[in-house]
Length: 319
Image 1: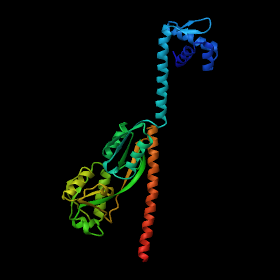
Image 2: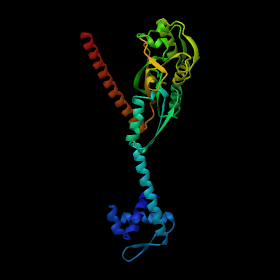
Image 3: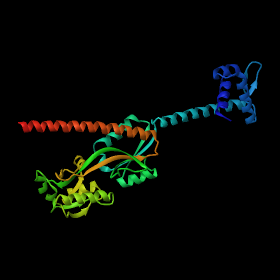
């Protein structure tokens, strides 16, 4: 039994006439008659009483008409739902993110835009560390993730640069370091540190140690390890020491903490959207495209702001 058998049967059942049903379906009447005969032979019983002029549904035909209509409607609904998924209008998108990436900028804006532009789609957000996200993306538990420490190339993963962030120093307000106008690495030689763990990115950790050594902070006095940025900020707020955080932490740090740039520390940290190359989800493609546009707009805006700041400094120097 095929769907066309049901469509032909429903048309005849509603028209009660082969000729009118054939015109409605735009098929030849003999072909329509053969299809109904095939259907009745497959079912093993008749659906119509044949009349001198037209046909009439018998008891079995009336019941079968109700079910045939329901089946055809369910098939049509299924096709509509699948079509919306194929066009990226519905479905489920699972996205991971690091806690410190969603306070400001492209990441929270992309979440808001997704819900505005894809009201029928489900966005499942899962906070986790970068290394955990990458593992989940590889295994298929996540469709994509906002991660730090992405390798420059990966045979299995695609990535899109979202932002470049910089490492800065979190210190308790009132700490002597906060009074320095030009803070340098060598000024931190005696400061107790709450340091970040090495396991998320050994290469980045080792590079950080090297940069500190190069700038005169040859042996940091590490008194405590903070498992993430929130823990580091909390411990700094408690007065236990100073710690390295992203510059974006200033948007969410406690009132008792100041975030300070260190002049001779050049440690950019890329934030990227990563996903499996073989993930063909239309929702993911739409999400990544929107993030690309947001990142480009912010990059242009950032260049404009830097340009205006440079002009302002030039005017002040001329004065």
